Image (tube, helix red, strand yellow):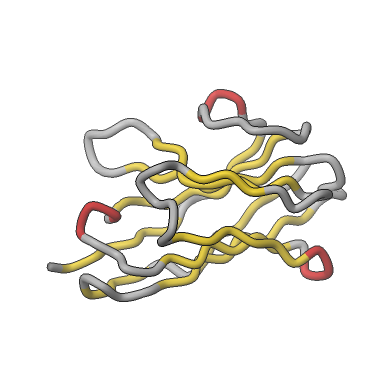
Length: 124
C-alpha cells in the first residue's frame, strides 16, 4: 500500500508561484502513474497533470498547460507540481494520486490511492 503526503500549499497573489510536493511511502512506485488533481468548493475533482514514474512522461490539462510543470525525484520518492502565473481560478484543494499502472489517466476514478490534499488559495 502506498501512502501519499502533500505539502506546499498556501496563499499567493495573482501572478505568483507555488510548488507542491507529494512524498510517497510504503512500496516502490515502479510502473505507477502519479497525478495531481484539484477540487474547488462545489466542483468536481479535476485532473491537472500526471507523470509516469518509470519513464517520466508527462501530460497536462489544457487549463494549466504552459503554466504548471510536474516532475519527480526518484531518489526522494517525491512528485512536484510547479505552478506559475497563478490566478484565482486555480484556487482549490490539490490532491496527489497514484495508479498502479503507467499511462494517461485523467479521471479520478482511475486512481488507486490518494493523499489528503493541500489548500491553494490565489488572491486577486
